[in-house]
Image (cartoon, rainbow, N blue to C red; front, side, top):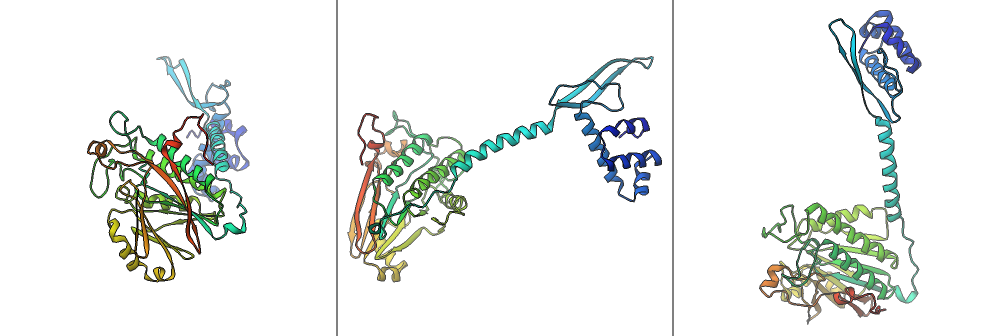
Length: 403
């Protein structure tokens, strides 16, 4: 910081009244420390204020204390001035270093953020609560998502079909949208992710428990973000038709950690939407009572299919006693299996994802691919269901729609 009176006086045109007092005090006492004592303020306050004044002068296209005061290009300010001085003490060459005005850059960034926020605000706008008929008030629509495996990468020449993050998003969102369209009006919509929503559980593209290396489409953070948006799009679509939407993400063997991160993210996203209930359940089992219906959910990797009836009865004996229609929904095996045990029906659901190269190579998980919606009445149990096969989602534009 130059303290020559001529230099300080050249700053006056750009100074505020307070800064002019600082200049006068520094000139009077010939030091910043003396000026601080004179004005009874900390010297660092004066020093920082004068440095800001220098920066302000530079943004005006003027370099105080030098011979350079030419106008610089709009949007730039002087960063510094260098001189080449000869043996005679005279300036031979002078060059001015400029840089883009940071204030202009900040303003440009604000414009970008405003445009981004406009898109987010449009996407996150409140969805009006729909009206439903009286006959729909005792109905619930349940959509079990069987093992979505978002992030799985397959090649049709090597396995069953091509599959990546883009295809996963298209299939899952389209299936939920179609099932919402063809399902009846209802009091509540349950979107139940049966586990293994994400194909891998860490940045090494492995499962946390077994450490198996997996075929994954892209970086872990990319897969996570795509998975979050898939669920948000599905929930928003359900909100447009149903007064209340409940989401449960079961813990699978492929996503022991990321399944819980998914629930936390959705809960935060819909924190101000009272019509959305995101279940944050750290247990591998989840139970819910809907009138006379019991809904149990388990991925299927820790308790096998035949053991589920006694497991449910032992876990929630009171709910078991208060209900008449009991259903346990499972994933894990990728194929459809349904069996009525004494007091409860256990069902395993298919997935829209194809087999990966390893399972295809050993002839495993050979099954059809679909997603379903189940319609439950509070007094009468299951009264209907609709099925959306993957072939329908992959149909050509000329094929008719199912309504």
